Amino acid sequence: MGFLSEIRHPTTWHTQFAIAVLALALFAFLATAAVSGFLVYRMINPARSHSDISLQGFPGHPEKLVYTTGGVERDGWFFPGRKTAPTIVLCPAYESSRGELLTMASSLQDQQFNVLIFDFSAQGTNDGRSSLGFQEVGQLRAAMDAVAKRGDVDVDRFGLWGANMGAYVALAEAVNDHRVRAVAADSPYTHPNDMVGLQVSRFGLGSVPFVTRTSQMIFDWLNQPYRNAPRLTTQIGKLSGVAQLYLESPDDPKLTASTSALFRISAPPHELVDLPHGNYAGMVDEEKRSYENRIVSFFLVSLP
Image 1 (cartoon, rainbow, N blue to C red):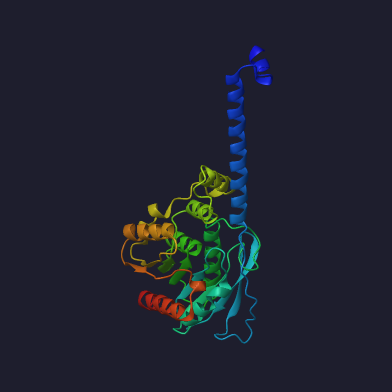
Image 2 (cartoon, helix red, strand yellow; image 1 turned 60 degrees about the horizontal axis):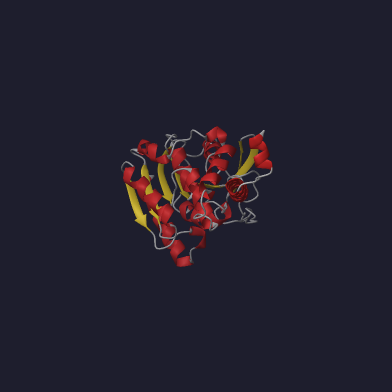
């Protein structure tokens, strides 16, 4: 009783000091949790870009491809190439959408590839929340399955392209899907938790103690079904015999480091390319054409 009484009504300076420290620690904990929770909320509900495009009369005669993933009906844009040709699936980056990939799709279709572009959850007009790559792997697989059911494509030869989140998803699918024969990965990270840390840094709070780790813990709690998902660094060796093109740029040192790390431990055939600038959607016309030519050339060699 004396201890509780002293806590309620401190009479000594050291008790008062201890209570002040505890109160400050509690406030810091609550503030860190609140800030981290807000950051994670912003990450899983990202800003959306949406292109309202009518497929009717669009060059290349794209078709709407409807498929179901997680019990939800979605659709992609399928650009038909030569019958029984391979299909290239383009995976949008975080805070991006399929509308930003139309010119790349056209460049690949010009070489008679079949091309599919689609949106993940929380992209374009799609509802839901982003898991920064966890659930998106299943969404990519569902889209590929829908393409394979068409009957006019090579069901055993797919190529994948993606940037940051899309690159993670493409590689994560490729290591477990024998249909994928070539992957172009632009600035991939090795685990969605890495993207959480990257986003915290982009918000300018990466140097604040405990915010990054607390954000990752909250993100893990929200994605408990995927808590055992392995890092790409432990899986990338499965791509032996699968053509891999890794693209890195100086725009974000953390993604540059992860791209280089994946390339170093990956199995041939593989190639690492340094780009002067990243962010395909934000490139100027000449840079974009050069980028598209590099991607097209890679798939022409890898998926003849």
